[in-house]
Figure 1 (tube, rainbow, N blue to C red):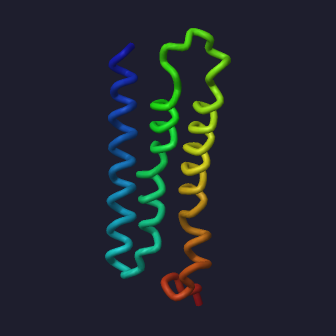
Figure 2 (figure 1 turned 135 degrees about the vertical axis):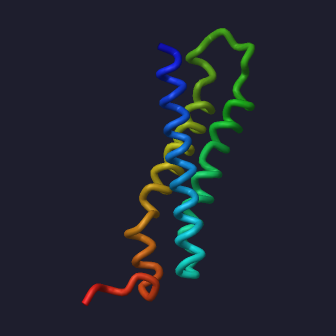
Length: 104
């Protein structure tokens, strides 16, 4: 059973890498670099969770006492991930109307 989980993680990382590659190539093709904000958002998304994990006290045996910082880190990470999904095409079409002309 552990091999099925490993295969799933490898497949998802492959899809994510292909997605990043396509975003970067589309930026180079149309010479509009606003979609790189999505890539930057996904790169910065784990940083609040990492900082919150470092600040949490690992020696505390009471689990409910020190979870405020961890919850804030998870909330900020989730916000950045949702913001990255929401920034994909609809927002970018409004920001750069010349890059995506309307169909005749």
